[in-house]
Image (cartoon, rainbow over all chains, first blue to last red; front, side, top):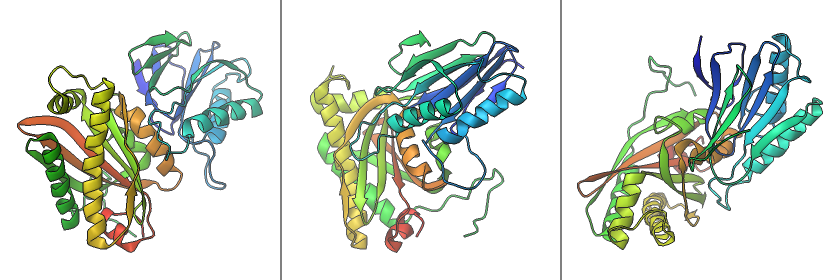
Length: 157
Length: 203
């Protein structure tokens, strides 16, 4: 398989296909958690929507505190090593800047950082906050994480 | 409640209730008076959309749009977003401020915010009056971004509470020009039975 795998809201996905790119489109307050392990290579992404989930029920990728362990678990079961892998995060903007909306972006960023810390995992790079939407692409072949802002600006993470 | 499903797994759309039609007519009349041009607002069917799928409402989340956001609270509680294609925003800005005025201009943004204010206040005002409910819209916020990024913040607010949200989509045409405008009304689950009846919020 080759091409683009869209990572929709709440989805956690891992690929060992070097020809694949995992893409989270148009993140606002959501955060994309990217992981890449050169052994394989293995690339994974979680599209986090909210900081924490309710107790009970199956773990869900929509919550930071559940998505990070889910992604680390997927990596481990595929033969990867979460502590060796490179972890990067992007997103958590406050696009609407409306006083009546809770600052979910900031909370998502904090929750993702805390969830990674709880797993003993370091963040190699991040592009978070601000007030502009982002599209995040992870290339499985070499782990390149490319950010495209809504303003058109692009950069590697 | 057990709802019937279509072949695609989506719940069947509900017909647009009369108060919603009246509210869109009033909003169209108010906007027409503001921009001095005939305006048509066509309410689409009310449907329940999975909360996490809301960024796909306009087709693709990466669609560049101008979003005019207002919250509302009181007996009805939720979010309204007027999403305009760039062409539509440029057209409306030019109608109000003269040719050559870009929607990125601060004055044009202010004017677009007022368009959102007038449209939403008229819409919600009529619904509230009919049902004797109190509704307070917030001041408008105007942003330029993708549809997905704009709707993301609302998704986050709703996703912690509900798996599906009732959505009312209203398409807007100004004069002979299709502005590509879509008004999206997303009520939070409401305790008011009147609100649940009108907007499809869980009672």
